[in-house]
Length: 184
Image 1 (cartoon, rainbow, N blue to C red):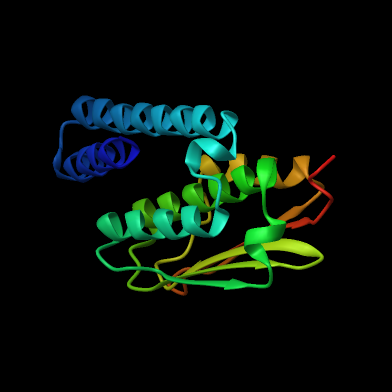
Image 2 (tube, rainbow, N blue to C red):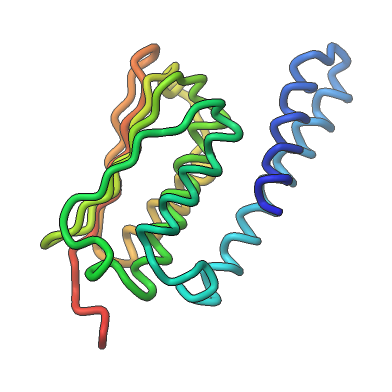
């Protein structure tokens, strides 16, 4: 269902570029924003249900998210896991990692115009998610939007989000949080 909404949003966004009438363009952009907000709310609801709502295995769920991104990107992002991801990234931490990955892939699909995306998920003393693309890079005046959600999830876990980008060189998002005992 999220992918269908995402496709509708992309279609509306593409149509908005074709419309010269300012009010019609404004309405289409508002519809895109509304679809994006609906997608974020659905994701929040899903992840609030806990990791079992997504299947419970962070590697399998990350692989599914990357496979789904293929539909909008028109190519499959590279994906690799380093360290004991499956055993260390569980519970609420897995939900946060998957939400950050989903939002990052959504941003790449909507804005990057890339031909290559690489996703890496590492687990050790920290859990680090890296999503990098070879797209157009971030404009100077970009709106945080979904990135604010990614930052919030890292901050709640005393982690960081690093964003590297320059026009025409792509973007590299690094989401990193210290690994804590999630059993308590």
